[in-house]
Structures are given as structure tokens and as C-alpha cells.
Image (cartoon, rainbow, N blue to C red; front, side, top):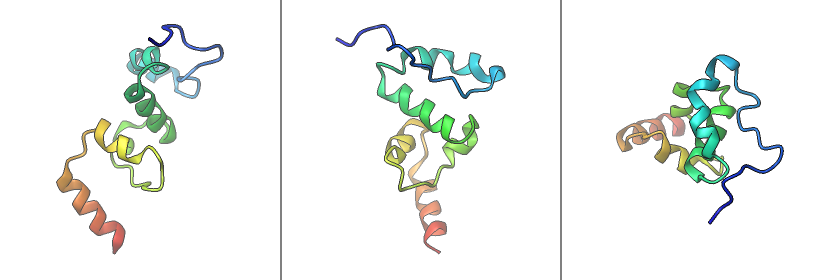
Length: 88
């Protein structure tokens, strides 16, 4: 069973604007033990905490990209459309 306390120095919202910290606080509290919460926060951090941008992510070379698709619930039809655009 994972330790319920985050490791020293673990601050997943360090770069999050104060106005948005309340929105992501619950995820941050479990990010040290939950893969889904950790990936979601990392993806949001990557796009400057802009959730719609995280949903539209097209950085397929990112090791978290497949998890991002699952977490943000991107439908397969949208994937097919974006793949066609990216390949053009």
C-alpha cells in the first residue's frame, strides 16, 4: 500500500496560477499515489493549465499521450480526424 503522505518537496501545483489551484486541489492531493491524477496534472502543467488545450493535445511523441487520450476522454472519431490533419 502506498504511503498516504506525499514525498518531501512534492508540489504538483507549484506552477499553477492561484486562481486555478482550487479547481485542481483534489487531484493534486492524490497525484503522488494515483497515476491518472498525476498524468492529468502533468498534461495541464504542460499546456499552462488550459484544460481545452490538454484535450486537443497532438504531441504524439510524449510518453503520456496515450494516457492523456484516455483521461481527457477524446472520442475515437476525433482521433481519426486529427490523425488525418496531422498527416496532411
